[in-house]
Amino acid sequence: MQTSPATLTNRVEGQTFSQPLQQTVERVAPTHGLFQPCYNLSEADFLRLQQSSPVLAAVGGAITSFSLSYLLPVTVEFFLKPVGARGSFPVAALWVGMGSLAVGLVLLGASLVFSRERHRVMKRIRHHFDSNPSELEYRGTPQ
Image 1: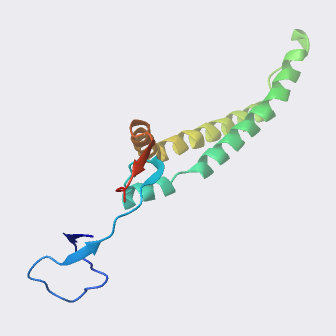
Image 2: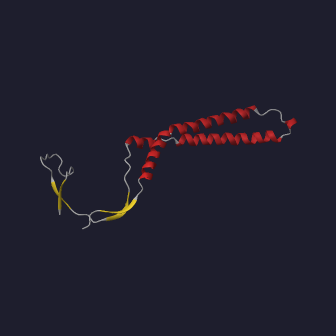
Image 3: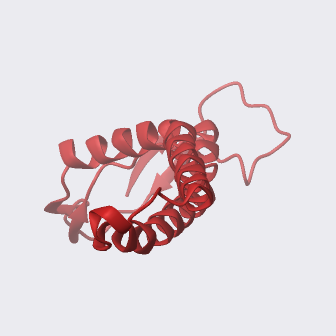
């Protein structure tokens, strides 16, 4: 049995010591496993990960898809008519299609801007685990 200085806050709360507390430390059987340094995630980083904006991206994608699916048949119908029978492009369809396309693209852009902090945190976490791969090793002291 070995002895070493240790502080046991959960067992000696409220007491004051003038010298190190000596406690016996039992030997531990060796452990075989995959070990990797932990990533210390701060509360600020955790909040950045939570505040992503997938709703803006989803709504922007849906509106952009609507506008493209709205404009495609109108455009195809316009160009399939003979040149002399075409007339002018339907202005109402153009306003609806281009307006919804603009709104959808603005929302997609906003989702990228608002999730920039989230991407930075994810990049730091990815870099940590890329530069600290898990290693197969034995830990503990032999008995």
